[in-house]
Length: 414
Image (cartoon, rainbow, N blue to C red; front, side, top):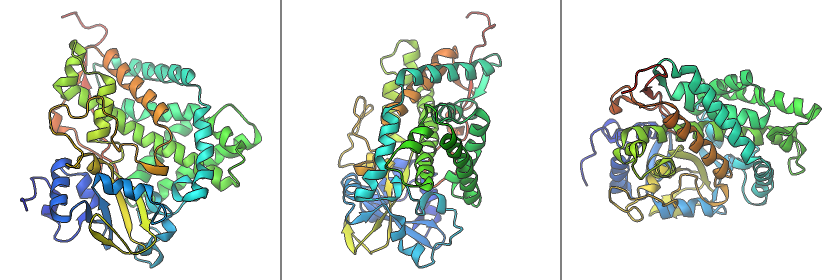
């Protein structure tokens, strides 16, 4: 077996590698390559001290995991380590991994019942109205900092656009949206403040639902409140939790990564000067190489079974290595431009729990990237590319910041 690559978390752990260290590794492809050499397509990892799981890095194995709900359940009440007290009730893993009465935590007919309200709500979204609202939001944000000649396209742009788009579609006002953003950041961090972030997040949405029960409107919250497949206030709340939490964090990460790619990779950078690769190609490449959800929780084995040559015990947790599966050498084509035009990635997961919002998500992401690139003349990174780092999380590689510089409206022509 080869020596672990520089920056690989294998250098830091004698036992199972911490999942958060894998997400933060200097080179994900090299780290996944090392994991495959040591473990094969299913690797042992640590979620938090004393709590282990399996990380599925193989493409075929991940498809088997997501499609076989009779063996691998999404219902976290089947998680042995939680039932047996190995995972504390106040664990930072809770907001991302504990059971919720929503579509994410259900299987079979129950999952399909809870999925219908989301599909119906998203289908009812007016795409043209959303396009206009997102374009207006992007232009307003750019106007606020364009006179400076510099900005952080994460905190001042990419984080705000999905939030305001989802707030507009759901019925939240801007102030509630900002409070929601802070709560979501804590929730996805899976650290000590994750439980408190989750509590604040649900309180804001509960107030919105109660308002829509009293006075209906043309928005996502009202659509869920009125849907006959949702049988309680808790199911309505948790359905809205799924729509907003998944959409906000993943879209923000997708936009940030696509902007970074187009500003640092000459194949895309040259598009601003007449090159052939544009925004849609950048969005697809991000979904291949650095998808918004790097590692997605989780499936739980309903029986003793095998996957990828590993014995999986009943109750064990399996993490979906979405980024890892996209680098599986059994399906990945080497080369400078291996995925241009190819959308067979697993960036949106697979199986019954595949993301239901792929179309509106791409619409929002494309508009956000286009508006920044063409609304900020001569835009470039304001720091060396290697200084752009991700926030700590076992699940995502969301850029902490993206400092850029550009020509101001009053700058002399060059």
